[in-house]
Image (tube, rainbow, N blue to C red; front, side, top):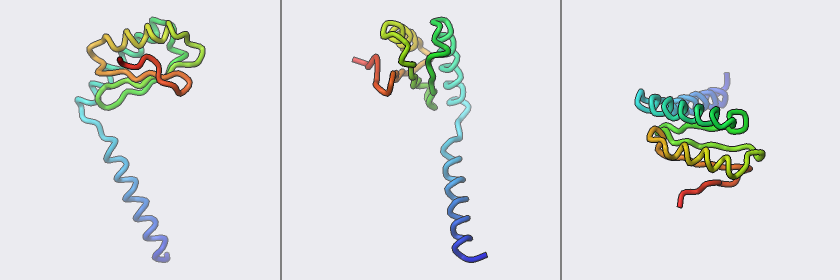
Amino acid sequence: MNINKIVWMLTLAAGIVGCTADNVLTKEEIEKQNNSSKVVTDVLFNNDLDQTASYNIRKDGYVVIQFDSSVSEKKYTEVVNQLRSNSSIPGVWAEQSGVEVCPLR
């Protein structure tokens, strides 16, 4: 095996280890994510939007949610307000078609 292949493999291995170390969550972060996820799931289901929205929960429980273009402004505003009013969720970023909706004022 030549030296270039060895250097390349070591670089790749170091990059993989570095990336995975950043993705380790503490028990507290996992609990925050789980609490936020339960709220989001319930709110979307109760508003019949569980098939027209996708979301991601950050380590701190902050929600990033994207609504399908078929969801009305009235409906996504109601949902975002419900999420923001829940004490389990520290914040909500919402978007539709790549544009932020319901910005904080």
